[in-house]
Amino acid sequence: MYCIKEGIGVLPLSNSHPYLYIYTVGLFGKLGLKYFSSVGIGIGIFNFINLIFTSIVYSLLLYKLFEFKFNKKLKIALYFYFCVNPYFIVYSFTLYKDVILGNFLLLFVLLMIEMIYNPKIFFSKNISIIYFLISVFGVFMLHRKAIIYVIVGLVFLLFGTQKKYRINTLTLIFLSIIFCFSANKITKSILKPLESSMKYDYLSTRFQQLASVAKYHPESFSENELKLCDKIFGLEKIKNDFDPYCADPIKNHIREDNFKDLKNDFFKLWFKMYLKHPKTNIDAILNLSLSYFYPYKFREGMWIGDYYEHMYETKTDWFTFKTFDKTSNLQLKEKYGYFDKGWNQNTDFKEINKLKKTTTNIIYSIASYPVISSFLKAGFATWLLILSIGYSILKRNKKIRPLIYLCLSIVLTCIYSPIVNYYRYSYLIFITVPILIPLLFVNSYKKE
Image 1 (cartoon, rainbow, N blue to C red):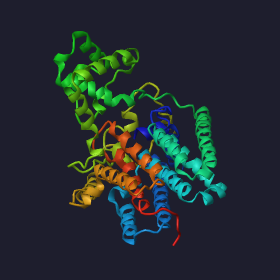
Image 2: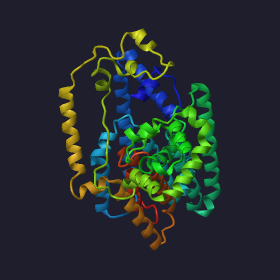
Image 3: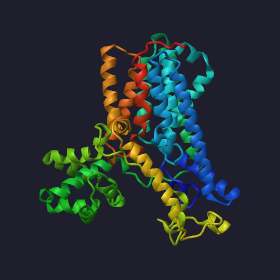
Image 4: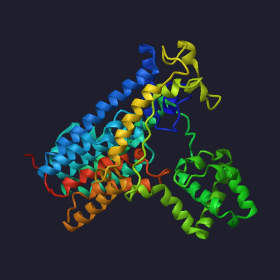
């Protein structure tokens, strides 16, 4: 909802979320309002296009993988995994940026596979170069941590391709870097997004660690150190809102104006408390990340919302009611008199909620079913990755290593996740790791 609010201009465009993605979402919202008298219809069209895009990418992925010769049962298993997975189905028409990021990442992986296993054909087609640049740019622009995936993928791709094609690969890598930074600079100069309002998001796990020590070992702090903690995130907030499995309550209370001048003091105190209470600090990280590398006992958490429900179930619509600052701009509502024609506040969503609850219960029951549930847990996928690493070393399969390093970088970024057992964060693990399995058993690109 915040992305829509910023995209349609109620709030100014910023880099708090990927600005190009938010701008695109906003375009559809505005088009929906202009031509269909409804922001919701515009967002629905965007989600439908996202669904089509995801379906095409999955189909292309399976088509390209099936060009390799490997066990037919494994092919059937992969087909059902990607096409019948209930979480994939639900996520394919949501507004999560991770879904589109996943699509571009899969395209990037597919092109890496072609460069490694069939470089002659890849470099003989100019269109392959264009596809590669687009896929890298898509990954680069859709998440801050995705830059890590681009760097890891490109670096190890250079060493994974055949020697006689390394100059071509190196040239393509430089082209990709130049294209990403140039295109980003041009789009920024045109759209002029504001700086991120969440400047210190990347420190959320550090905040959580210090908050953990303050929560469980307050006697370890001097009076001045407690005052420092109070200035940064408020001691009362730690007492009342601290959640060991989610860093958001602490992160959201960070007083950014204070923290800007206290950053050095914070790191000194964090390091001091890390040495003083290493177990508490390690526990804080494990509580936020265990599910991403160990099969968690609970199903993956997934949140499914509804635009109209959030907008019209209360007395005031979400955009008007949730006006966070003085920069909010409600000219769209002043111009049209509504955000969605025909919708009124205090709308009863009981029947829709029943349907949503039934659907959600079906998905969750599948996700809790023995054996099947294992394939819907990120920790299991990570174990599969570890086994793939071991098997590739045993078989001296060097071709697959760039892909393994890429998957490993995805898992490692989840270790510093701000929330445990959240499917949106582990989605990329689920869609990339299974690709390794057939490639463990092939050494060449052979069409049947």
